[in-house]
Structure formats: structure tokens, C-alpha cells
Image 1 (cartoon, rainbow, N blue to C red):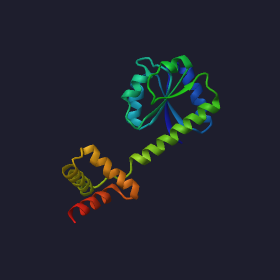
Image 2: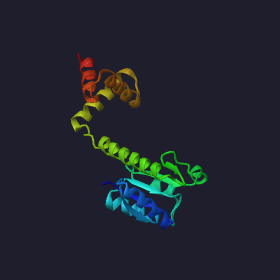
Image 3: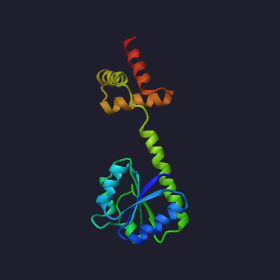
Image 4: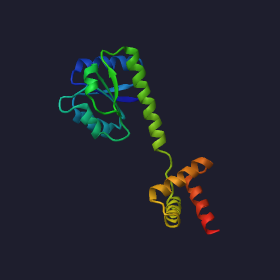
Length: 180
């Protein structure tokens, strides 16, 4: 079972949500009452989903979210007026009082998104040789066609996507076209 963090100032709220999520086999819950505890749990336990209220004892959840690593997802559970005060579009919002079904499905969705994000972010990176090839092709496009680096990259990227080839393969083709 996946692990998540429940971060609420009010322990009774946290325990109620923990009971719902664990009894429905959605996630194993770690309880936190402060933003500092959440930061420490994310760092030491590697947890990527935080379900929280509007604020904690030592900080707002919006400020906390800004401190979390990019792989973390946050869902704020609060009354509608508090959710409207949250300026971040990256924080998922669930109005309270929350129905059990809505909580369960929302947390499952976040866990699925988290899994997808981890799979996408762990894709193999280009080798140094491939990165050098792409850089060489961009330099050629910039020199011969007066493109900026961003334009040259976009050109390679678009041709790569249009042809269904990898970026490094397209860079190789561009270099071959220019030198032949």
C-alpha cells in the first residue's frame, strides 16, 4: 500500500481521514501537525503525496508546498472560502465537509498521477554523445540559419516529433544534410 502524509492542525480531522483512507486500503497514512514535520517526512520517508488543511501550526500549506520537491503533489482539504484564498493552481483542492467517496477517489487519483510522474521522470536521459550531437546540430542551425538556441531546439524538436524519430537521430540527420 502506498504511503501519504496527512497534515492537519486538528488531530481529530487527521484521524478521521486516516481511518477512511486506511480502511478503504487507499494508503498508509503518516500524521503530521506542522509544516516542519511534513518537510522532514517527505525528505526521510520519500513520500510524494501530502493531504493537508489550509494551514498548519507553523506555516500555511501554500508556503509548505513551495518548499516541497517537484515530485510532490498536495491536496488541500478545507472549507470553500479557505480554498479560494489559496493562490496556487498546482495544489489540488477538495472542499470540506468531504464525502468519503470523494476523498478516496481524489487520493487514488493523486497516487496514480504520482506514479505516472515518477515513471516519466525516470526515463533514461540522453547520453553525453547524444547531447553533444544535439548541441552540434543546434550550433549549426544557429550559425547557418540565424536561429536563436531556443529556435534551433524547437526546430529539431518539431522535426523529431513530426517524423517519429528521437531528437538525437534528427540532430544526426540535420548534420548529415548540411555536410552532404
